[in-house]
Length: 395
Image (cartoon, rainbow, N blue to C red):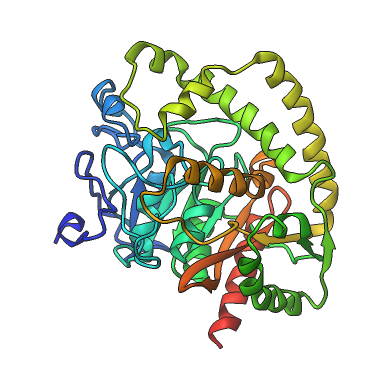
């Protein structure tokens, strides 16, 4: 039976559907996966969440290497999953194709832009799913949908054959319901050894951005992680304040998006949805002087995080400031949530760091993720930690 016949969650695309069998043997043999509709498959069109993009681009001539690696490892591609328009939103509500159902939080958004991938995993339609994370597009949906989500070190997984948004921030990411499977997928995509973790740091300024009720329900999870490490140290990640760091990320991302897609937007004048149009209007106003200044600020931020995360330190923080917002929220509510979430999400993005979101709490019956960040290249360490913590939870 096709995934489209079983998909009652509207997680998979109909307009760009493609399914491919995996190799008969391999570390992921017998597993199925969903693929965010920004990854190219040879001979097929890539939709990018936009009807106008679909209409103005030819079928791909080559398959993205990350997809080939998964197929060669034995995993079977079930189908393409919905993404937010141009992969440029945190909510997952696509004005053209609709919103996938978040089974873990009925009536609430699944998160974007990897909305279909997170929804498909949460709903048990596939074993794991591939998304992408530029500003939070794996970590946010993982928290909202109650699954594990991994954003790797920037540049560790090749992005050939993947539609870009902001290249110095773009990463391939993936979801699973179980931390052990998340790690198995990571072994295929990353393939390195796991180092032993050092000290545990608790990001006080990131926790301060979450709503008080979120901090309350996360306390037992923070305590559990602290017990695993034996001790924990509270730190302020940013000396300037995380909202100031987010502004640096915003300027740089918008500048890159304009450089990447500005010509196409100006030429085609696509029919963007009401939440996406204002964002591309802002992108068009990118200021080269502010971009240059923000590049220097990013260098300072990266150095601060390099020192903070030295010796295999692990930084603990909420993934998102609250549970998933309700579907159909007013524009000002969507913006307010985004402006609160992105200062928390910008840490890994600005510095190219790996971050894993773990479903370790609930609030009002809805999932809430707890995250760990590590230094560049310590992806396997985070995956191993999440597996060990998840094993302890089940025991």
